[in-house]
Image 1 (cartoon, rainbow, N blue to C red):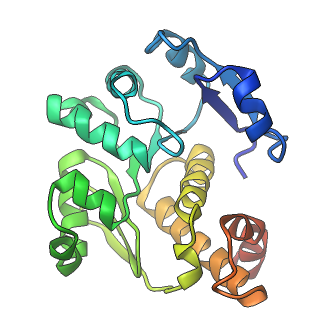
Image 2: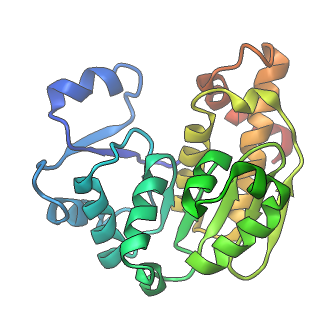
Length: 239
């Protein structure tokens, strides 16, 4: 559990509150002005222990600028997933050294093979042949912990530590499963800090929650929400 979760959005409350808060009553909503690239965001980040960037974001120039400003001026630990990875790639193309100013253990990226292909501009088939090697290379290059999702997810950090999650659970391929993992990483790293051990633990816990959901339902019937609902059971089973 994260303890406190806030959602920062550009949309006006009438456009988003009905979508988000109908089910997520625990989430606090905050909004920033569409033309304000960083001031409101930096103020909002001051008391945050971790942020997640990517799920649900639009890939546009305004968000590229916001990503650049956050990476340049904020040391808040972050988990980058989904569209956030595309924004990160564009920022790095323009400023390859931007991540060098960030603190150690302050960045986790969670690409699946398709996203990794776009980040590296390499074919999926090429990455698939050496998933461990590519994960290790990008971890060192970007001073990040890389979670390369897929069957036997690879976790690698910039110090050469590598782990492979060997829990192959087809239920984890359901839409939204990766977003659940990002949320879990944000929660764990927000409370305990970003570290290789914490990220590896979270990947394992996510897989166990998916397996329990699959056992209780059917692997073809599991939805992302089912994984969320089984996180407490995964905790109780192993911890």
